[in-house]
Amino acid sequence: MFAALAATGAPIAHYKTCSTFDSSPEIGSIGRAIDIGAAMFGGDWTPLVVAAPALGRWQVFGNLFAVSNGAPHRLDRHPSMSRHPVTPMDEADLGRHLARQTARRIGLVDFLALQSGGGDVALAATLADGAQIVSLDAVDEATLAEAGRLIWQNRDAVRFTVGSQGIEYALVAHWRAAGLLPAVPQPLRMEAVSRIVAVSGSCSPVTAEQIVHAGGQGFRCIPIDATQAVDAKAWQRETARATAAALQALGEGFDPLVHTALGPDDPAVAALREAVRSSGVSMGDVNDRIGTGLGTLLRDVLRETGLTRGVIAGGDTSGHAVQAMGVRALTALASLAPGSGLCRAFTDNPDAAELELALKGGQIGAVDFFSTLRCGNF
Image (tube, rainbow, N blue to C red; front, side, top):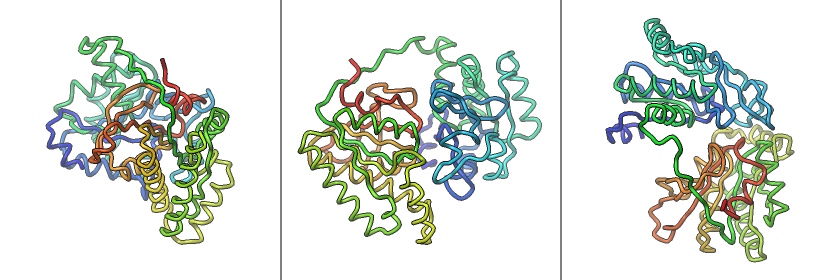
C-alpha cells in the first residue's frame, strides 16, 4: 500500500490512525506501520499528530485527552477507550505507548513551544537529540495551525506522516492562516432519503445511545450474535440470519440497524471475550471477521433492495466493512459531525454507482446521528 502511495508523487502521505490511538504491539501496531512507511518514503523524521480539537481530542505535553459525554478524560481513564474490547488503552502518554511498538526514538514539540512561536527551535532541538518520530501537541486552532506549518514547511524532509484526521485539520488550519485556502469552506448538504441501512460493530456508549435513539425514530434495531464469529461457518449462518431480518424490517417499513452490542456493559461484550478465550482464536482474527461480515451484510441488503445509502459505525468495523463491500475510494458529500461525513463510495460494481456511505468511529456524532442520515440536513 505504501509503495502505491509513494508512486503518486504526492508531497505528503498520511498513515491514518484512530484519534484515540488504540493499538498494541500485537494488534494494529502503529509503530510497525511507521517502521515500514519511514523506510519506504525516506525523509528525516516522521510527524505524529493525533489531537483533533474539533473532535474533542487534545494533546498536552504528549498526553492525549478525549471527550466522553461532554467531559474530557485522560485516555487511560476514558470510560470507553480504557475498556476497548480489542486494544484497551492503559497509557495516555503517546510517546510511551508508541515506544512499546517501535525502537525509533520519539520526540515532542509541546503546546507551549507552539503557542509562543518557538516551534521551529523546539523541533530543531528534538531532532538534534536524535528523534526520528516527533509528536506534536495541539489544544486549539492556533496550535493546530502551527503543527500544520511545521509539517508543510518541512515537507521535503518529511513526506510520510502518521496520526488521526488531526493531520488534515493541522494542514488545513495552516493553509487557511497562510491564505492558501479560503477561511470558510462551502457547506456540503445532504438530501433526505426514504430508507437507509445501518450496521454497527461499536462497543462505545456514544454509539449505544445513538442506537437506542434510532429505535424510537423508525429504525428496527437487530442484534447480531458476535460470539458466532469464533467459527467461520457459524458466523456465516448468523450474518445470513441478520441479513434476512434486515430485509424483513425494510419490507415492514423500518430502517434496519444491525448491531453487535449496546455499549461496553452489554453482556454481549463479555460473552464475546469468553467465546474468544474458549475457542483459542485470536481476538484480532475475530474482530476482522466481524467487520467483514457486517460489510457483507450491508452490501447484500443494499444490492437486494436497490437502496443507495448505508451507515457503518465503529472504527475497526468500518475499515473491514468497506473492504468487504469492494469500496476503493470515497469522496465527501456532506458533513455529519466532526470526524464523520457522508461520502460517495466508488466500487467496481456498475450497479452501485450511486452508493453513499457514512462511516463513524464509536465516539463520534450526536445522539440523532442515524436519523439525521435518513432525514438530511436541509
